Length: 93
Image 1 (cartoon, one colour):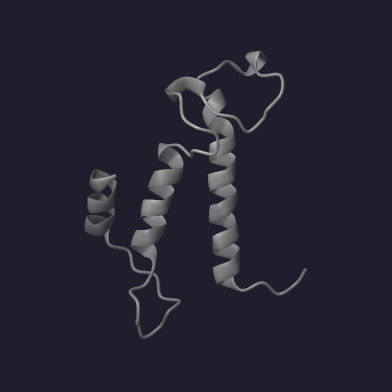
Image 2 (cartoon, helix red, strand yellow; image 1 turned 120 degrees about the vertical axis):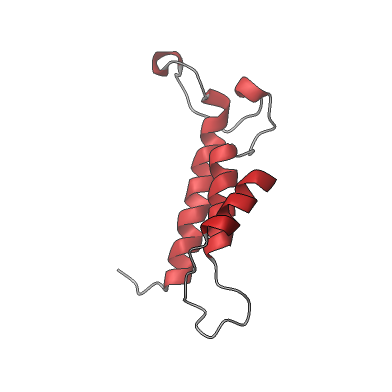
């Protein structure tokens, strides 16, 4: 396996989460047996355009943004856990 830095891994994980979430939005709240082919398209239960991620993706982005170190931090790999900041971001969303 190639040596992939942690930032690239995290970015890839977030991208995968958002793409998977957007792919599933048109099928939310449908029984599994009613889904024959999964395609990226609009509409669905909330009539969103194709490629729109749900609250799951939006809140994952808010959490990730909260965990990122401040610009100019002494250690750019440092993760900060601040529940008040996370709460503010969730409420703002």
